[in-house]
Amino acid sequence: QFQLVESGGGLVQAGGSLRLSCAASGRTFGRYNTGWFRQAPGKEREFVAAISWSGKSTDYADSVKGRFTISRDNAKNTVYLQMNSLKPEDTAVYYCAAGPSMREGYYYWGQGTQVTVSS
Image (cartoon, rainbow, N blue to C red; front, side):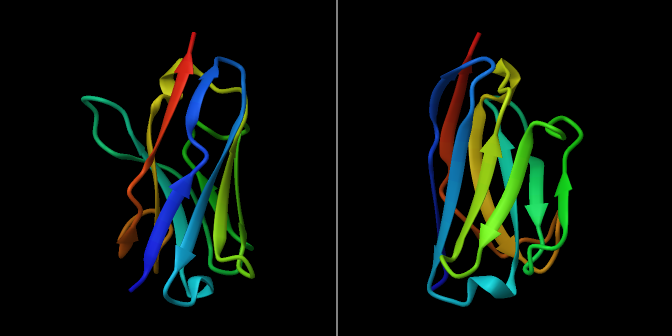
């Protein structure tokens, strides 16, 4: 069974940084594009960033461009989201997902990790 497990969330002050990790198990992680999404209380889930299976292509939401960086290490079956210059509006539960596309149509989802940015 293919599983995704996020880690690295926590509480940070505005302007700070966090690095989220998404570890995959059960199948060949390198076959899938991988994305990060987030959902804040009372809001719909939104796309944050995605990376192709090879790591050669990336895509970012406008709200995080220049602040967040997505990367992957297929040898470790892990995808990372480096988040810098965090803002209170980045507060949300962050989910990683794996599938054939970059922004939608993901097959597999993790359970999420909470990120809270204090002002």
